[in-house]
Length: 289
Image 1 (cartoon, helix red, strand yellow):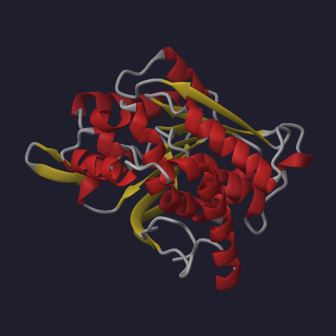
Image 2: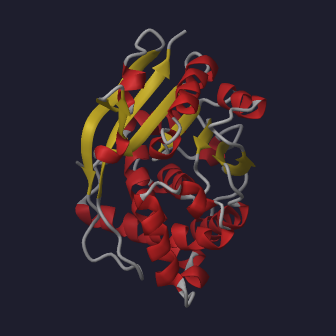
């Protein structure tokens, strides 16, 4: 299901613009002689959920972004082109993106705010939109390159969007993370629950933090794989990760609720690496007063 009303031609053109940014930003990584070797090693570590083995090695980060960010950036562009998300972007919010160091949210949201049909122009607002990427390892060199490329290719100025990055561990919630959640109009958790629930006790603390800290009237966006990787085993029973938030109806009003949606990119896109389709679930909640 396409989230926007653009024609297939227009959709393909916009997807290609996004890939052009990533191809420029990731050019050096793609040319690395050890790219295939690094990628295979990461895939093996993903299989056994050795996330620290991937993300705490800084030499892996540029390879990860080049390989995995394109599909997600394209998907996130379509998600943020939905009318409900466009309405939020039109207010020039502060968006706090949890576990977003690799840059998918930065690219996808920037594209939706600048290029999506009907997107409001932030340049006419009294304040810029803020996209604050958070992660537990230092992605700042990757994010700086993506930001510079986006500003150059798409002409996005600091009066339209400000980009921020901070480090912090979501399994050990700090006061800084709590303050950032509380002060944001939209908090996103996109494809991070598989990693969070590798430690179930601390993951449940994360759920409690979201309930406690998201401000009344603000939004929480949860997106993750619709497959078994997002299921959690508790006392012998399997639960999808969104069920934890669905059960909190006294705290959150659901705005978008889809258990399985396919993102399929346009055919014949030009990018040096394979760009895969993906199936995801999505929940957009508004915090009750």
